[in-house]
Amino acid sequence: MLVNEMVQLGAKRSGIRELFEYGLKRKAEVGAENVFDFSIGNPSVPAPEAVREEIARQAAREDSVKVHGYTSAAGAMSVREAVAKNLNERFHCGARAQNLFFTCGAAPAVMSVLKSLSVPDAEIIILAPYFPEYTTFIRAAGCKPVVVPANTKDFDLHVDEVEPYVTAHTQAIIINSPNNPTGIVYHEEALRALGDMLREKGEAFGHPIYIIADEPYRELVYDGRVAPFIPNLYENTIVCYSWSKSLSLPGERIGYVYVPDQAADSVDVFYAVAGSARAMGHVCAPTTAQYVVEKCCGMMPDIAAYDENRKTLYEALTSYGYTCVYPQGAFYVLMKAPFGTALEFSEKAKEYNILVPPCEPFGCPGYLRLSTCVSHEMILKSLPAFKALIESGK
Image (cartoon, rainbow, N blue to C red; front, side, top):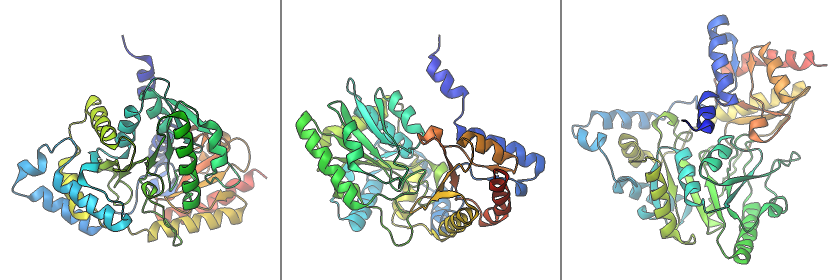
């Protein structure tokens, strides 16, 4: 006997992955240079040279037992100390090594926090559009996802729209800023207002309501904007982070959970995160990656290529008549389907060898997400196809 839900999850890839796999087949048929694949958010900017050198240095160390052996479940103490020091230098947040639990990327970090909060009838609020795996993670943790519909006027955070969805069963709200798929960076004022509302509701319901700050795109912001560090705005914030995007290391699977001292029941929350990770088979985060992070956690990404890509694509598409959300961060452009449903438009785009996933799985029907972490050359070559595509619907 098998759990049918797990069979279905394993048998059916996400829509993004399906489109990515289709792209691989199509590239074999017509040549990779003739397929314009905007489906997947896989960083195209190489890891910084210093990071690559540190990876090589760690791999070549004579003390292979240390580099390739186990660390403590929470991570090597020297690594946690280095990251805490970097957080304090950047955000003045009072982080300690003991507040950090290292994970195999941001996804297991989020999952460990969700599992920690899965009391009976627990509800987790997510804001549409959202990273599609959130609903999978929330249900797998034993909680109920509660979706706040997208505000398609500006796709920003509006506390008055969130408040009606907060109930006595609300354990947390996931905040993803910069946002996937919109690229919106939530303003400090809106985040403070959200914290005030959650604080008031928590007092009324008799239990804290946490913000789970999912921040893999924290450093990818443009036009002089800054993504606010949410624990400095609302005390009951738990941060889930990854170096996948900032240092272009998605395959190294390295991230952390940060439980600030000021969060309610912080010690027990940390233990619950550790216990949840343990129950899901966590032993320790990849050791070599940990030691690379120890030396490189202070490095900032070179976002010039992503910046150029988003401007080029946004300006061209809007000049052709597409309606797009101007991305303030991350590496995506959210585009409204100019005709038909998003799924129909995505299928039509295939005729022009353009691969763009519809956003129904993101909780945002009628829109599509374009990943801009691709080569600039591909974007330039795709523009005539985008122009012909929209003109085909007129």
